[in-house]
Image 1 (tube, one colour):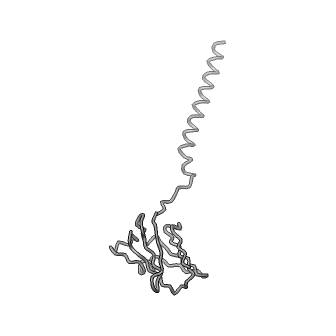
Image 2 (cartoon, rainbow, N blue to C red):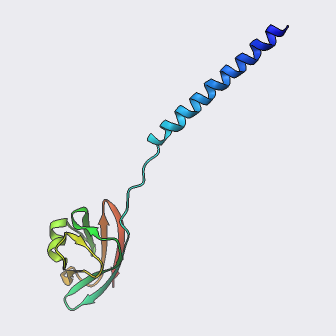
Image 3 (tube, rainbow, N blue to C red):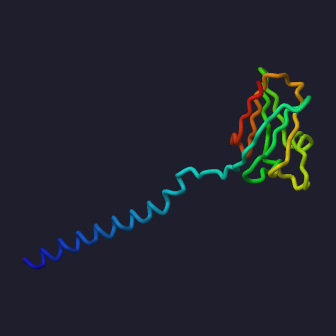
Length: 132
């Protein structure tokens, strides 16, 4: 009778050990299946009409790498500025290739008066400005 009881306890302990090992293995590997969050740059922008330009100023947040950026201009048709075009329009005071606090970007008003300008960095929209 005692041997039967010991056998049942050993069986339960073995099952418990197997469950704990499987749980540890799954929890260690499950992170591979969870999509990671991209590091999205955070910045604050303001826009204003300045003569013949739309001027966009970075008012705070992190510096944004120009090579990771594109700007989408929507005036009924879509125009996309790549990083080379953006760098030419950016007043990069310290010439470091980043859009830093206080630096401004001037886009010609030749796109019209009813324009939406979207700033995209690392494939994520970080700002949308409406000029009406």
